[in-house]
Image 1 (cartoon, helix red, strand yellow):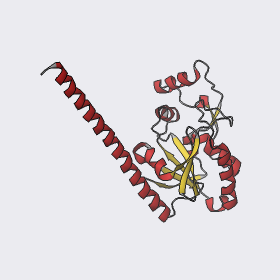
Image 2 (cartoon, one colour):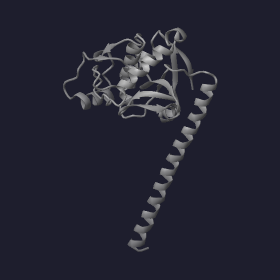
Image 3 (spheres, helix red, strand yellow):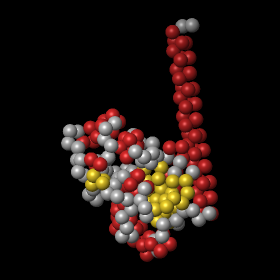
Image 4 (cartoon, one colour):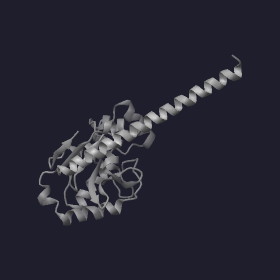
Length: 227
């Protein structure tokens, strides 16, 4: 076999593998979304989702593992469920803060897994006026950049900060305990690397932080459903 023919065959094989990988990945994403759409329909039919519910998942972002290790929790991302004319969506702090259709939000998490939590006395606390207030607060943050430094100002926003501030300002409730960055487990190598990447040699150990697991463990909440 000549060198030219060999190179042609090798290129053809690589191209075929590339197409296979792309199609397999694409079909997997489509399948995940189909499953998530079905789950959302079932949740709505059983009235297992309401506006104001908080939903948690394991993110597949580059910082997810560091968050899990630092907080000793498998949940690294959260958002608040609201509803508009198109259906249920999650207000989440990614880049930027935005509305994501609930089914798409579920599908992008690790293995499509999620937990939905709700205020224990939601029927009394989250009336239409309060939900409207929370929606307004969320609207004011929509479009904000994601806060990779986990600061406490309103200039930028990370996921659990968005949830906490919407509840605090829109409903007058503090869902989850505020902590300092130094309160977390910063000893593992993935956490150290991420901290070095974000802060260099000046880690703001006294920065106020709210973590997904702190909200998850709040005594004000109860689990509605998980898959």
